[in-house]
Length: 145
Image (cartoon, rainbow, N blue to C red; front, side):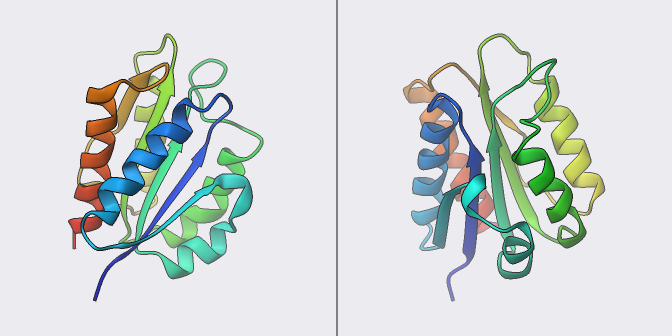
């Protein structure tokens, strides 16, 4: 039976969306059934109830935080469902060193999620090596039991 993987993202400029598409390609390469959707189009309770593998993407905002109008409330509602879930996170930025990804990782890990791969960062629009790493992230999360 193939795994069900949700790839949920917030993208203001298209950079994180491009990463999400590559993550989904990697997950699909394992035979997984993949949902690829912007955070505005999904219900966190449904995602938490249906998917065991969840990969989230968001660019850096403000002083290195995740987007606060959509992604932050989504994550807060998703947290009660994360115990035992397999997760991955990724995001793009123009200047950061990834502090927002590390904080986000810690928050989700503390809620009970397991991460088979480190958070993935790309600067600006992801180049070919970054897109390959995105595919690897999707594959790694989808394959982890």
